[in-house]
Amino acid sequence: MEYTEIVSLLKREMKPALGVTEPAAIALASAKAYSLVGGDLKRIKLELDAGIYKNAFSCAIPGTDEAGNEMSALLGVLAGDPEADLEVLKNIKEADATKAQELRDKNMVDIEVKKGLTHIYVDVTVETDQGSARAVIENEHANVVLLQLNGKTVFEKAEEVKKEVVKADEHEDAFDIKKYSIKDFVEFVDTVPFADIRFTLEAIKTNKELAELGKKGAGMSVARTLEELKKENLLSDDIMLYAQQLTGYAVDARLGGLPKPAMSICGSGSHGIIATMPLAAFAERKGIGEERLARAIALSYLLTLYIKTYSGRLSAFCGCAIASGTSAGAALVYLLGGTVEQVGYAIKNMAANITGMICDGGNYGCSLKAVTAAGAAVMAALLALKNIAIPSNSGIVGDTPERTIQNMGRVADPGMLETDNVILDVMIDGNKA
Image 1 (cartoon, rainbow, N blue to C red):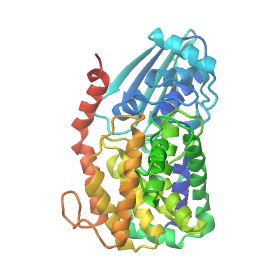
Image 2 (image 1 turned 90 degrees about the horizontal axis):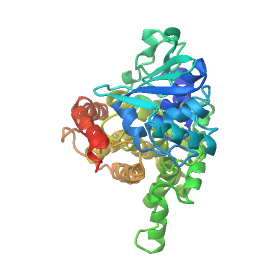
Image 3 (image 1 turned 90 degrees about the vertical axis):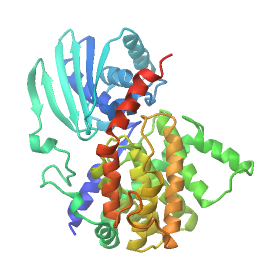
Image 4 (image 1 turned 120 degrees about the vertical axis):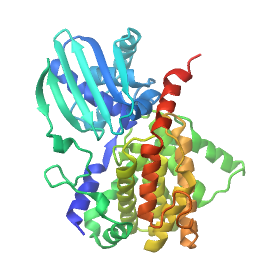
């Protein structure tokens, strides 16, 4: 096993992200462009892939009462920190939001959606009284590949670096995660020195702190309402509900725009939350130590990365629930002492259960999907530990967990590309009176 490369991959992909990462990607690109040109803003032009557009469409922006693609771009110009990656909007003040509202009302932002793109794409041109500047992000949410000032290129990544290939480090050869099996990942987390993956526990700390904010009420307040239902004896105070609540509190806070980061994976805070909070719930309630928990987190994050290489970083199905939920279920089996075969059973159970869940952008409803995913992950894991699994070659379930994951990817791309276009059309036109 290439321990160093895998650890480097986890460190590179595990990042704190303030708010939903699609608005952050737009804000980062606009901040990068504006930092080149300066001056008084005249216009912003956005070209976005469908996934970025959907996820920023109605998503709250941390530190404001605002949402959407236009506000993300405007706030990136007005208050964005171009060196802060996905925490680009951490310094927003009320005056910045007020100014952005005024500019939005003047129709200062033009948006074009690039239908059919299956990778992350944010192309921002900022025009001011000093000239124009352009920034392009591709494949990953903070991966700036092009900067231009007044039509002249001042920075450009080499074509081979732009490609959507999971790498352990940009200075190393491309790291192909697809060449590994589920057994390989379990072997890695079983044998890697604890000291080398202790850092994964930071994900629990970060996401639990976000969940604590969510307990006060945020977004749709799904998890807070679950607590009320528990007190009314309408729900049982069991470990599944606790896993759902921890997950829901954090996602409520994140989608509600509370100004505290989540620990992301694959460029997504919601992925990072769903991949870790069910594990945190079981570790807490079952008294499982930090070392076992860190190994389970590493497995969950690796499986999320693995699944996303087949489905795409953004997709027509809900990657947060499907990719991270599947990974959480599999990692939960490992956390509770299950075998490699049982880890695979959990993957098959999840594939047969929630793969069809659509993505209709980042919005308050993501909390419902997150809670559903956490519950499904727990059920898939507990069934797997009893050797209950969907039989091979049932529907999209393949003869191996790896084949099953590949089939899940095919459902997303090319399977749901037209679905994605319909969802996009509904969001742009269908909700108008």
